[in-house]
Image 1 (cartoon, rainbow, N blue to C red):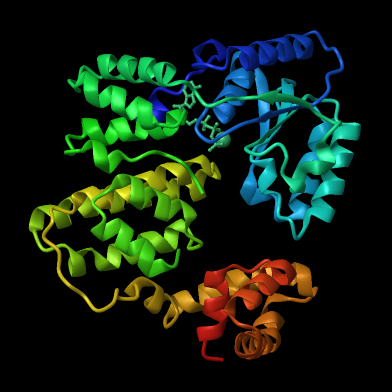
Image 2 (image 1 turned 30 degrees about the horizontal axis):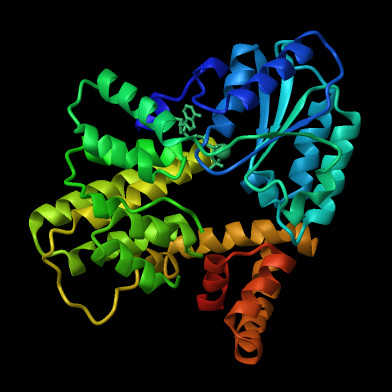
Length: 405
Ligand SMILES: Nc1ncnc2c1ncn2[C@@H]1O[C@H](COP(=O)(O)OP(=O)(O)OP(=O)(O)O)[C@@H](O)[C@H]1O
Ligand SMILES: [Mg+2]
């Protein structure tokens, strides 16, 4: 991905946001000199370089990073296990440590009590500098941090700042892209540089991107509506928005798209191209899991949106999208046991019993609760309840519900 290839390694390389970058430099100097520093909170819109800046700061000042992000905040035990010892001990090679809590406004609202106290304690006892990152500084979920952190704002990049970065990349890649298209990508980026670079990547791959298909980037649907946007809209913008606003997790979306490409696209070329993007999306989705760097999920989503421009206008009419065989298969084979095992593993901490007991005794009960709950209160309430009480997501609930006990 171009985004990875051209991510700067130093604060100097961060485009735009000079004031914020200067504050970060001062923070780094204070840390280097061993001054006691207040934790900082970098906040601002997506794709403006917050995570990149924090990494660059650590990298260029020789800090060893201890990094957590959204996916880690659901587990108070994990938080405590990682953070509290880390906040007092030295790095493996006696290097200096820097504690980075990225996407802190994703702290699960349902479990914030536990996580809040762990994080407050971390701030109190840490001997190492701490950086928080959030999109929304005013989010209720992180109100407890106000006053305890020094806010540093990242703003949307201006179109000319975005354009400069894009031009630079085009030059280094030795590609020819029209000035007009570049300017248009920059103008419509809404200051989201990651988005702009990803759009450029589509353009450089020779996709016939029209100005309409770019749309504008801003963030914030049921599965079939999302699939329609992906397959029918011929608009990267609409596909992207649908994917970003969907409740369905990206790995499931990939399965759905994967299954339905040949149902919808008629020409060999479209199918071919669509699968190219599905496979790239899937690659980054898996990479996110493997490396625990969830930033890759954002690449994965942008790549999946690429399926929309594989549409050459030659569509099959279908009654309904087919349910992914992969998910069906999973719930009827050996995979089912694996999947159930993984769910049970999560539940042992909450139910305080062993895995086999969870499967034999609790699963039937949970299944009955889900079925009855859905009848009485509706699916959404049930999802909410299981998310807050058992930390189970939609797909996991489905697996319990569909399992033959
Ligand atoms: N200001 C910037 N200067 C240089 N590159 C940038 C900048 N902002 C974003 N990028 C590019 O976009 C990619 C994504 O940026 P990054 O992950 O830092 O965004 P972010 O602000 O953390 O977004 P989010 O809020 O969605 O996590 C980087 O890998 C880099 O290639
Ligand atoms: Mg980030």
